[in-house]
Amino acid sequence: MQRPRQPAYAKSKPGVWGPPRDVDAAVAVLREAVESGVNHIDTSDYYGPHVTNQIIKQALHPYPDGVVIVTKLGARRGSDKSWIHALSRQELIEGVHDNLINLALDALDIVNLRVGGIMEPGEESIEEPVTVLVELKRQGLIRHIGLSNITPKQLLEAQTITEIVCVQNFYNVARRNDDAFIGNLATQGIAYVPFFPLGGFTPLQSSALDAAAVLLQATPMQVPWHISARICRPRCFRSQLKYLSISTQSVEFKRC
Image 1 (cartoon, rainbow, N blue to C red):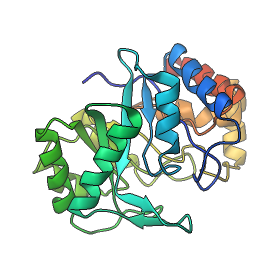
Image 2: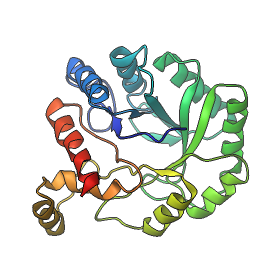
Image 3: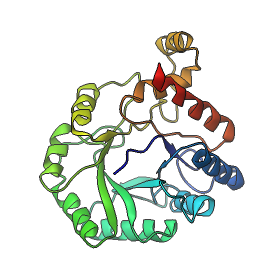
């Protein structure tokens, strides 16, 4: 599978609940992102819920050749907007079908299994949910399987069951816990796609970040894109064209 050049992520308002304030603007960002060379769209049907996938479909369907849509399973939303684990066999099956329906796809390019806590991985076995995804892959509903919010031990466990093509963990310039893990993944040819590369809903504030930006002749928010370029681009978290421009301009840093 060709490695995606640069991921993008279309999200609704903070809390990832309900539609964005300006749906037309979100659609415009997705279309401009793809026209600018972005070919990795990160999503999940529990964003919204359902809303983000429906906007992706509205903006991009029928999907251009080469665009890879990467979705996630492992959670559902409560009526109080809470995030609830959804790792049972039935919940995973229903999650795959929800993604297929709302994205208007016959098969999902990549499904990341999201486990652990909100920010930290757990130590639990992931054999059962991975096995369910493998069954769905054999049925032709999933093409590739990835993992999110995991430990190296959990990766090894999953690899005894199936091929893993990508890992998505919490990582940025202020949180470097996965440095050694990233190196190991690189030797295996497994893509690493950090979530919250710019700090999440609270942007990173760091004098070191400011200093690096001066050195690179960039903005502070472009620096994490440069750091992450050694393996895979981090996800873009904004639904406005001005932020997309800042993010895509940072692709040039790969040559630094």
